[in-house]
Length: 420
Image (cartoon, rainbow, N blue to C red):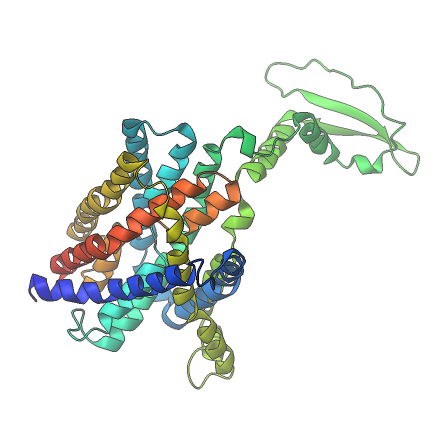
């Protein structure tokens, strides 16, 4: 297949995404006012809590099996490499452009977290259903493409909220961070040692005991138990240090965001897919609970259009202040659409050369696509949660998504030309 035909094949799904995004932007105009601030907020909640987990569950439960899960081991590693390389290139870009420190995290997040959700889920199935069928039989290509892109979306979501979110937290100005009292934390640690069993008036003074250097210093505390008997509770310093680390870890890592509804949808989908008993119960036209699966699929089908509409509605904010940060925006575009795809080609081709991955052209195409997508929509959500860089994030989103119809289409064409 020649380059021009491949370009036309890659252009169709990108144009589909662009048209829906333009509709979202039109609906967000003040003269129309359908996608107002509150409407976008409620639609975003629906996408986050309902549509996304339903889509991940329905796709993974139907397609993923234990055998396919083992065969796709390189996919999570490929996404992790994309994140690490994106963070490194963004750090270099921030130093070259002398971006303000509070924007370093946003630059890293934009270059690291690619849109591994809505765009691959639109592009890959649309290419499979195209008139030219570059990847072979339509049904086989479509189902395999959904499996690859659904797993991509789940893994990308985990990396985004575990790596990128905490990078943004680190570079958030201290005025936006809730401070905590160290003495309060130490009191909470001491309270973990069952002091509720002791009367508050019966605490004896702490006795220091000198031990050899080979031993660990211990704190010996005497307390009076409720039944009137006294006994000694020994607390080792190692235990206190471990509890301090646990508390600090809970403060620094947003576990609630990490274990988001989308992740639970992916987990349930994988479990249903790899366990034969559950699969026979829910998946398939003859399954007893097939109506449940069908209902979840219907909810999941609303995810992609809703996400793209929200992207288009949020891009209008980026029209303001476009000329103020041109060097930084141009640098991010160069990283996203030139440096990362070139590095991705070297990584994927190297993996094929050393037989780390199979020779399936569609699988290789999805791995290459990881490196050529614009920033993830979740980055905008993170900036809103942390209250930092919201206007700059809208500017970056506008610039990168406006460049996607041309640059992303070109890279999709190049990727298909390389793997076919």
